[in-house]
Every structure is written in structure tokens, then in C-alpha cells.
Length: 409
Image 1 (cartoon, rainbow, N blue to C red):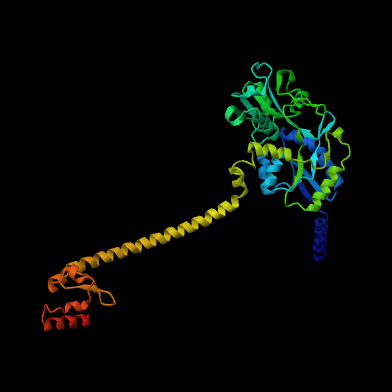
Image 2 (cartoon, rainbow, N blue to C red; image 1 turned 90 degrees about the vertical axis):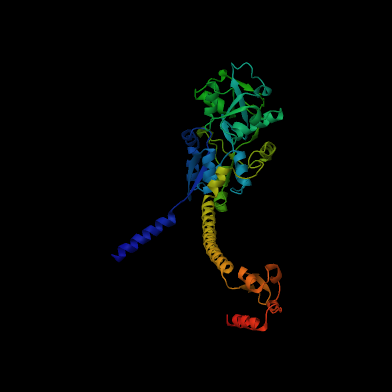
């Protein structure tokens, strides 16, 4: 029996020694989650074959889901748009990037991307950026770099504030929703990232002939519809808790990837410079460079929920203690007030002459009977020494009797 237990323990120990460490790569998904999983499945297979000591998982996430996962450390690495990376970096949640994604489009590995501004072709009154003033604009959200911030920056340069001068319609992810919102005439204009329109036409979801590109840009090295400047593609970085050795291994694997264009992967290059993105965010006061320069409320609550609860309980306990003490003191004050009222009634209504004196024999208060018996009024008595009572207004026998009474009391 003991022998079989020992064998079992050895077997469990052997399994634990050979267990692979699992790491999750969170990928910002601007397409439906299943589409994103299919696109990145070859990378998962490659990494698990190349780095046999580890096991990697791919998790598509919306912007909100990614924010929650990062603060909860539910992911180890993130592949996200540059604005999202800068947001996390400025809030000290991730390390600097170790590689930049090459986006594969039409068999070309692209290092840059941009934003597209489009309307329906039958919208005859929308032809240039200035025409967007007062129009309804569909976007996945103001936190999307390629789906809002790049376009808002272009409009800013011609004097249009998208918040004040247009009506924004938020469709949320994926970007496909924005395109449909315009085609269904719920919005006049749409903002999406580059290559999406071509991809949707390839999937036979739309016909580009139905759309008009606003502020079209031409670039011989960029084969897609474009309305903004070009900016570096998505960075991949690690969260602070990830061991540097693991990051080094992953970086080496990504930068030495074989040609996998036939599998839909463009590969990775050394990390690009993201200062041009920082310029947009700072100029437009987008997070993390907004006025308060802090997380939005939802993110703050999610990030520090435990501390908020603990601090709330501590404050509640302290307030309860203070309230309890105040109630106790109030009860004592009422009791003292009742006693003082009773004493005041006795003091003023007794037929005996009473005075109150300080330790150094100065009279502080007298009652009505005192005045009646001694003849001294309050004005005459208060503040005087008690030896004033021997003033000659009465004979010696009276004072001898009074002092004897005081000493006995």
C-alpha cells in the first residue's frame, strides 16, 4: 500500500515538473471574435511548436474586455492598437513593446495603417471634410485609434470638433457595424480603420461602389483606401508580472518567424516608434492625456474595487464609532442638563440662603434667599470675598452662628 502511494506521488511530481507554463495573448478584436480566432490560429500553432516549454493561448477581446483583463492580469501579453498601448503604458500596466505587427493585406506585410472616412455615394452633399459639420457620424467608439481618433484629428485640423460640431453614433465593435449603420442610412458618415472596407467586399458583405471616400489620400506604398496620415501598426507587449526571460523567448520567436503569408500572417518587426500616436492623443486630449489624466471612472472602479470596498468598510466602521460616541455623549449631556435643571430649581426656590464660592473664597453665585437673609443683592455679592458677610450690618452673634453653620456644612 505504501509502495503504491510512493509511486503515485512520484508520478504526480513528474507531471508537475513537465507541466508547461501557459501564457495568454490578449488581442484587441475589431472583427467578430470567431474571425479573429481563425486569423491568429496559425500564430498559436507556430508558437506552441517553436517554444515547446510554454503553452500559448489566443484570446480575442473588445477594448473594454481588454482593459478589464489587463487590470485583472487575466492576460500575459497584449497585441493592441498603439493608442490602447500608450494608455496602458502611461498607467504603468505594461512594459515597452518588444515587436510591431506586420499586417498582411493582399500578400503584403504592412507596417503602417490609417483611418477611413466614408459616406454613401448617394449623399451628394458630403464630399470633403468641411461637409461633416453637423452630420451624423458612426464609429465604434472614441477609444478606437483607427476607428475614431485618427479621423477626429484630421477634422480638428480643419476646425471641426467631432464632439461639439457633429452627432456621434456609437456602434461598438466590430467595425463592420459602422459600415452597416451608414449603408442603412442611420448615419451620414462612418469612421473605420484601413483595409476593412476591402476585406468586407472580399467577403461579399458590401459593394465599394456604394460608398464615397472622404479626404482620399494616395500613397504608392499603401494599397488601401485611406483618409488620414499613416501610423505604425500594432505593438505587442507584456504585462508587468511576466518574467523577462519568457518575453525574450517570445520576442525571438516572433522576430524569426518564417514566411507564413500563405497562412494569413504577415509576421513581426522590431518595435516601431509610437511618438506620432502620442502627438494625436496629447493634441486631442484623448486618454491618458485628457484633462484629469486618470482612468475613466469605470476602469478606476474595476481596477481598485477591492481597495474601495476595504476603505469603505473602514470609513463606515469609523463613522459608526463616531456616531456611537456622539449618541453616548448626547445621552450624558441630557442627564447632566436634567440634573443641573433640578439643582437650579432647588437653588433658587429654597428658603435657605445659599452662595457658591470659588476655592479662593470669591462668591460666584447667590440665591434669592441669600439676598432676603443677608440683604446683599447679586450685584453687591458676586465677585466679593466671603468675608464681606462680616460687614457690620448684623451683630456678632449672627455672624458667629452663620460661620458655625458653614463650617459644619
